Structures are given as structure tokens and as C-alpha cells.
Length: 577
Image (cartoon, rainbow, N blue to C red; front, side, top):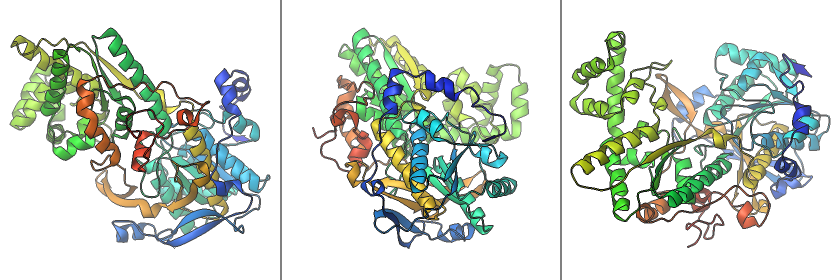
């Protein structure tokens, strides 16, 4: 039964009829599960109490009802899980990631296997559906239509947050009216933090509704000692790597273009680094390295120009550069300039925008900014200068609107023109810009993500049956056979730290950034000089769903390197060469 307007009317039957050949074939794929979850008799084993690595007292005060819970592990043995009929809701929160439908299918199958009378409800359009009480019962017909498919369109997603007192109270009322035993929130670090806030509130109100989170983000930055990978990262990076590989092939065919490829990754460079490991572009910029070394924008441009000039001298007026979208926020002099610019706009925004033309605005700002920041601002293309004179709804300069690849193209082109005019190079620089983002968010999940997501969902079902709340589920040991996978859950409070958000200390799950001492980065750093000058391109091709395991079931290079695998079947030189 649907409550509220029915966005599904006439939709499910059409989707059932209009299927591609691959969609029909994938519908028959049965995802793998950890060995323990395949048995009929399982229990949840609890470990010792836990605590976060930092800010213990602050987090304990904020989460008095859920702080210190033990790590949970699913093992074979005499069952201690609830087998009575239950009512469980599921929410898709934030941006899409391949495999979300399989998480829901795993929840559905895990709960129905325990008791066929259990009902599963999908909240529509994300957390907002919880607040507004908009949901739909998920039946076998609906679930079966979406197995092993990409996207979040089964129940749609949204970016609302359940954090205001009135929103928490609305959820409490709605869950009570639905008689919900549990809610599973599928999302990234912010969504799982939000799930912990909701779990704490519901427990403080003696609600029977338990809250479980599932780690999702294609950015790959929700991982730690407990969570080996966020789902969707595998599929998204393989999708982008196919496209980058195609462009590498095109570059060596046309031999006249430099391709600048911007990839997803506002806060972390995991996507760019993984795609570099899979395809070996001539240049890959890693935001965390640039921040750690204090690299300036001019130094970045000079590095790119140096590679372009050296390749041109070798007769190669073409190449591939990969860059994460969030790079400008990690560049030291850009950050300093933005801070100064924000202060100036805070005082003089109205006056600045009333000036006659952009030239006058630049002239005024040059007198207000420090000399170095004025030079940095003046070096930027005009369209980017204009973007930086705006402020978002939070009063911040909208650096995220900067098209990083266009910025680099313009600055590199200017420097190469200067060098040519002074007889210092004969390089021909014909750049093309690309942004690969949405192309990877809703792709058919790879076998890895199909298996991993289904296992995460199936695990979440057991966490609800175990009457646990305030946990994020995990599946570990995933570079091994599924027989060796280990399913369980981590208390969210164990993963929290305090960060300043919107001017006040806020509990959040810390994002996992690329570290320079990690095996994936060290492998990249050891090879990038060779990749820069020589054509070491690898062509991964499209994701394969059928065939040899080394082709179809390989984990990402990042995960394989992190786990110290000596042989990794991804086909690149990090695989034991």
C-alpha cells in the first residue's frame, strides 16, 4: 500500500516489459554471500565495549544511550535472532551508487527467509520520506524487477537530513504508526552519522525502532579498520576507467590531443588514484599529496607544462591528465586567497557587485587582497574569477563550481604560449576537457558490487533481527573467496570524531583520505615518472559480468594493494609484475 501520491503507477509493469538483453541476463544472477549467512542457523556474536579514537567525552555526552556498544559479528551457531514477523523500513540517502538495489534485495531476502510474514517498506525520496511519512511496501515483484540493476530508482533518493528536533519527532511518530521494528539507512559518512543521531534519539524515547546503516559512496572515503570499502566505488571506478582507457586509445590514434579528465572526489582522491592505477595516465594529480606538500597552483601548472613539453620533444603532442574535482580546495595559495576573498566579500559584497564591470572589480580586489593572493586571483580565467565572487547559501565562496579541468587547461595553455613566444618549446597543445561523474553513479553493478551489496543488505537484516541499533554493517576479507567473507557491524559512535561544521563542533564519521604512506599511493608514486613520458596506457574495457573469475570478479587495485595481494587479476602492472 502506498501512502501519498503514487510515483510508481504504470511504472513497474513497463520496466518489466522494457528490458535490455543484459538486464534480463543479470536478473538471473545470484549474488554470493559469506558462508555464515548461507547457513540456516546463525547468531550475532558481540565483542568488548568500544570507544572512538578521539573526542571520547564529547561523543559520550552526545550519545549516552548508544555509546560504547560492542562490535558485532555474524557466526554459525545456535541462533539468537528474532524470527517473529517484523516491520522494517529502508531508506536510500544521498547520491546514487551502483549496488543500492542489491542492498535492498539482501535486506528483503534476509528478513523474508527468517519469517515470510515480515513486511519491508521503502521510504520514498530519501530521509525526507521518513519525515513526511511517504513510503511503499516492497513486494517480491518489485524487488525482482530491480535485482542486480544500477540506480536508486526503486524508491529514489534524497539529501534531507533527520537532525532538527521537529524532524526527529516526526520520524518517531511515523515509525510508531507503522509499528516499525527497524530502519536501514543506506548512505555515506554523513548519512551513517545521521543514522546514529536517529538511533540515539529513538532509544532515548523508548522507541522499539532500531536503526542500522549501510556504507555507501562512490568516492571511496567511507572506510576504516572495520569497513574495507564503501559500495559503488568498485563499479564507478571501473566505469570511469573504461572511458579513460578509451580516451587513451583515442589519444594514441589521433596523436594530437591532450585530454584533461576531471573525476568525482570533492574531499578525497580515491577515485582518481584508482583510475590511474587501472589506466596509467601521463599525469594524475592527488589532492592530498598537493595539500601535504603545500604545492602552489603555479607549481602544479609548471609540472603539467614540463610533462607536455618533454612529451612534445619526444614527438608526442598528446597525453592524458586525471584530476579529482576537489583539487582547488587542497592548493595552499588558492585556499589562502579564498579565505581572504571570503572576508572581503563579507564586508564589501554589495559594493563589489555594484561596480561597473569585471575589470573594476578585479582592480578593487587587487588592492584589498595580499600581494600573493592578488596575483593568484589575477592569474585565473575571468569566468572562474566571476564564480569566486559569488557566495553559496552558507555564505561560502562556491569553490565546488570551479571546473578544475578548464582551470588547468587555461593556465597550461597560457604558459605554453609564453614558452613558444620565447622560443623555449615547439610543443603543440590542443586540449580537450572531460568530466566523468554521473556516468558512474547508476551503472549496472560489477559482480563485486552485486555480491558485496547483497551481503551488506543481508547482514543488515540480521542486525535488525538481533535488536541492535546505532550500527553500520560491514563485510570484511572481501579480496578472498566469499566463503572467507566475514559479516558483522560496527557501532557508529566508535567511528565518530568532532569536527567544526557550520561554525560549531559536530560529531561526524571521519572521511578516509588518500595517505601518502598507503600501498596504492606508493605504487602510483613509484611508477608515475615512467607513465608521464612513455605510453604505458592500460585499456580495462567495459565491466565484464560473465567469464573467467580474474576478468569478472577482480576487486579494485586499491583494495588489492591495501590487502597486500601479491597477484591481483585487474590486468595492470600492480598485479604482481
